[in-house]
Image (cartoon, rainbow, N blue to C red; front, side):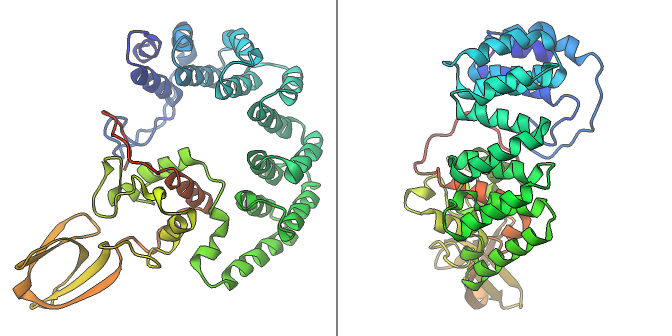
Length: 393
């Protein structure tokens, strides 16, 4: 109740209220990182009885908060099955002037709380907002796959990029064998160069999700064509466009498999081992950004190549040069440690490869790589660091 009252308290800071509401959403399945420090500190799942009853009195206060807080409160009510919020959700959905994200969240919550969603589905399909229509499409694909199939097929043919991505994802999941025909047609569009690169990965993923041998062969043929180009960049060409920048930011700051922030800094957040990426997209295009992830040795940023030193005792030291004077060379190891080697003790010295792990792409899915490229492409100007910002390691 203390956390719920914090989320509802109009006198509390907006970011604190938002955090409190997010914590309530994960109360029974806690996040694996510490909310304050971002360090890995997993908690076991739990089953707290009476959670909905404890939260319900505070929902009105949450709904009177910021846009982000309202969206979290709506999602929280849906998660907990609090149906008293239905009239409020219907008012939000019917208000065409309300924020689009908020209306989408309201639609999704109503689809979980209403016993009969047929009227909701019809309204969603006719809505002026593409994002609400996409939410309705997701609902229809789940509740009535056969009726959704021709709608999905039409969107794949001529929808916007975002709608095409969702339609292909839904086709891959659809419980209908007729989806195979539509996905074959999508491959025909790809061959005819009538499918945007931003949706190619979604097609490949959808085809693989069907476990259909014919579609698997089409995916394999496409991969062979990529490999024939002879570069890592070409092998990952479907990751250039169409990612989700918000998810990419989470990967950059929070995914241990990527470890981006352990070497790189963005707007004061991270480390100084590798180049500062705060404005990397100002003069670097998506091809450069993607190649730096999948083939970091192709183009090494100046002064960030690895230096390998063998001292007179035969010990090998490897890292990026942090400082060099007439007497000493100081290296930063991949682990962030500083190693000092006196120049008089150096037997051999050579340039090595990029300090960035060459196999980092193996630890990420292609969808995650695409999201990471999308996030990096937004970094065109360095900005000040907000006090109290939190990231995960």
